[in-house]
Amino acid sequence: MGVLEEKWAGWGSVMASLMFLWAVVSQYFSHWLGDYLSPCASKLLSFVYPYIEITFFEFAGERLKRSNAYAAVESYLVASCSATARRLKADDGRDGAGIVLSMNEYEEVTDEFAGAKVWWSSQKLSPKTPSFSLYPAPPERSFYRLTFHRRHRNLVTKSYVRHVLEQGKAIGLRNRQRKLYTNSSQYDEDWRKKSWSHVPFEHPATFDTIAIDPAKKREIVEDLLAFSRGKEFYAHVGKPWKRGYLLHGPPGTGKSTMISAMANLLDYDVYDLELTAVKNNSELRKLLLEITSKAIIVIEDIDCSLDLSGKRKKGTAAEAEKSKEEKKMMGREDNPDSKVTLSGLLNFIDGLWSACGGEKLIVFTTNHVKKLDPALIRRGRMDMHIELSYCDFESFKVLAKNYLGIEGGHPLFDEIRRLMEERNITPADVAEALMPKTMTEVSRSVEVCLHSLIEALRESKLKSEKEAGEEEVAEEEKSSCTKETKEADNHTASKAETQKEDAALDSSS
Ligand SMILES: Nc1ncnc2c1ncn2[C@@H]1O[C@H](COP(=O)(O)OP(=O)(O)OP(=O)(O)O)[C@@H](O)[C@H]1O
Ligand SMILES: [Mg+2]
Image 1 (spheres, helix red, strand yellow):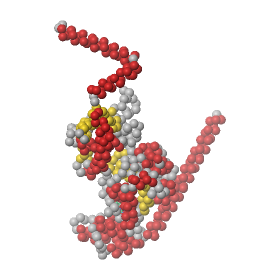
Image 2: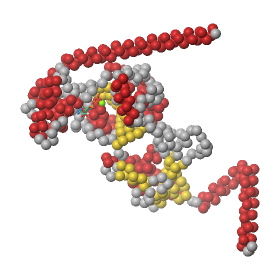
Image 3: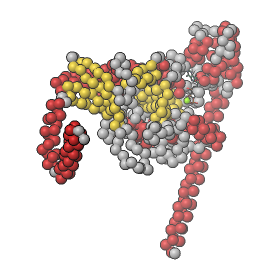
């Protein structure tokens, strides 16, 4: 054996002895070590590593909501990283125009601010879990880490971080692809139930294309714009920055179209909430918390989603099956155990939690406003009640302009006006009649379309007939409701009676 090998063998045994000694010492004197050695160790560390780190977690602490600071940093880095980062993530740009590049996980970029150099890295923290567990592992925690030299401490903590948050927020708003969300029953890759799934919001309706009374349209647009500019006002009067709209009227009068026009006017996201798929009030609250600012929360056909006692409304079996299939395709099936109550919904609209997130509209639509509980739609909850009704001549002119390009008038307009005064036709039916049937002979197509509208008007019911029919339907629904309630009451009473008898039998035996 050479001298060198002998030396190495000697070192090896010395190292092994030292490690054994360290293990014994740290086991028996860990308190002493912690108290006296840690400060020395941190001094030594700061001497050899003079850098400071700030961490921005996506979900900080016990918070249920995504951190705004994390979102702002993410957007800020989108703008600053694409030139230097090597591994980038690509996402759809606003309105499908191009792509937006952002920093991938475990990537690092540098930034400079007032002569100071800083480093950003994107990382994930895996939670400690037992090697075998029946429960799904808790999700990883994403975060951004900002590192800088300690001599820039004041500059970074006082100015740079503020600059990043402000810039990031502005960039986020600029790049934001508006989204249409739906509450889903799907699971993410960590087997956590996803609250919302989304697609890009692409509905083209605007207040220019919507056909309603011009004065009413102006009033709605002014109200919406005043709301969106009203941050200080709401803070001043001590109200959460939110507003409720109830859109009611017969089918095909433009309620859903108006929601899209609202979203396009204010540049808001749309959260289409399917109440029947929500398990209970606390799930409803969780959904609310995940809604970001600048959002319209929509509950369509509110009368069909929930009745006063929170029971589901019954339709025909075929209707129920059809809607079940549709919801399944969209990944949001009805939950038969849903226990969302009216009080849960009222809390959702204007309870303490409703102020979270800020700047949001809540819109209910219904075909039967009279069926709704007055508490649900009282002013303050549903601040503005908008009735959308059958098409009148003024609204028709808007549709004629949109669909056929008729600006002034047309020889057939007088006939159409006369028929519209005595008959009810929905804007949806008018729109359908005015759809050009051939794109080649446009001038003939105008005649054809107007004649087809006249035909549709002649076939539609007279106003008086329609009103009588509606009253009849309402009466029928009311009596079937009473019957259902009575049957339910009888069923409950007989069940209670049986339980009583069973209990009496048990106690006697
Ligand atoms: N006021 C309107 N202005 C312009 N188009 C309209 C209007 N009302 C209805 N339409 C047209 O009719 C179609 C159906 O309208 P929409 O879905 O908005 O009706 P709705 O009131 O939501 O009906 P439902 O109560 O059945 O949900 C739309 O695609 C739109 O083209
Ligand atoms: Mg609708």
